[in-house]
Amino acid sequence: MYESRLYDSRSIAQYVAMCVRDDQILSGTPDPKVYIFRTKKGKYGVKYQV
Image (cartoon, rainbow, N blue to C red; front, top):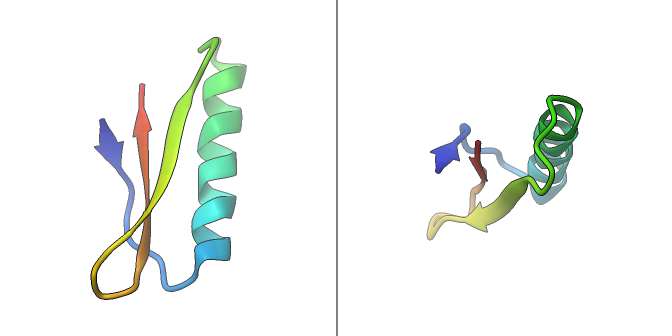
């Protein structure tokens, strides 16, 4: 499981997750696992598995 950096808004995290998911699909991963999570301080992050 990998984590990208933290973002202030959920919409930015969703955009990054979409880009990561698209990159994994283009590289041949059949079922990419990409998750958005929220920290206790209210920031959002993206977790993904390669």
